[in-house]
Image (tube, rainbow, N blue to C red; front, side, top):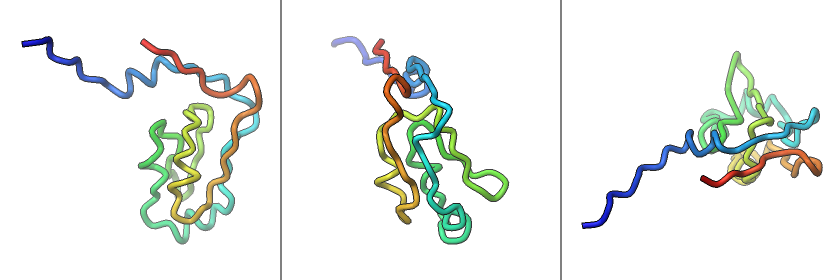
Length: 98
């Protein structure tokens, strides 16, 4: 029998990435009232692999500094309420493989 495959821990893998955050966010909530009043499931807090979105004190918080730039938020938001663009050149995530 061969060796057993080592289990992958996503948080350990994400730790390898480095981020150079710009002072301006590349993620924008278009209308915060939609998040508060119409979005019952707060899906963005679940589908973002980097946990960029957090529901706190009755409003959505965006920690763009750790964004993996996968674009899942712009696709999966049921209200199309997230505006997403690539960070400016020289900023954003730097992936490291190990």
